[in-house]
Image 1 (cartoon, rainbow, N blue to C red):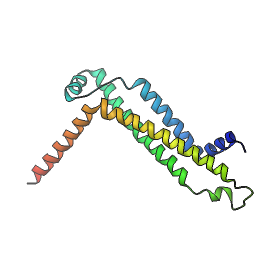
Image 2: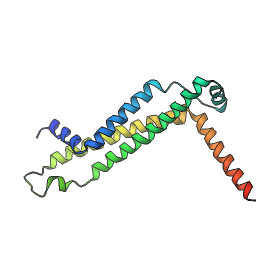
Image 3: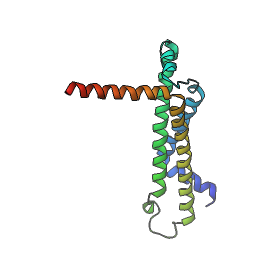
Image 4: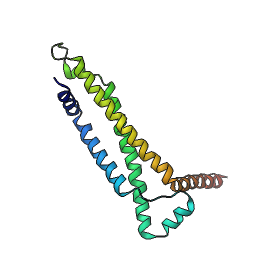
Length: 156
């Protein structure tokens, strides 16, 4: 078999993961194109945006889509790396005539490249969340500390 046939066969063997990855790429593209212009670097910016109704909806949608993209792309990266280390002897059988080490190596390289690509995409969305939406993260952290502090004071 030639190289292209091996790559196509690698995607066919993991067809459900390939379709899920395609959905992840579409989700990432939509999020990058339409939902990356809001910047909340401190709590003052956050409260200024919250007071405007149209910006509030956009802020919530931006944060949720970025969180969804981080989780979904991260899970895809983990599933692709798992595919690299999966033992596929049952797919090839024990006949040495049907088993070609070069074919398996090509498939595993494809799986590893997909894992690296999705890992990089996960990093991009995580860095956006941590850099541009850090005001929301600080608000969540303060809210968690406030809730924990109130729950401890109620017990006493």
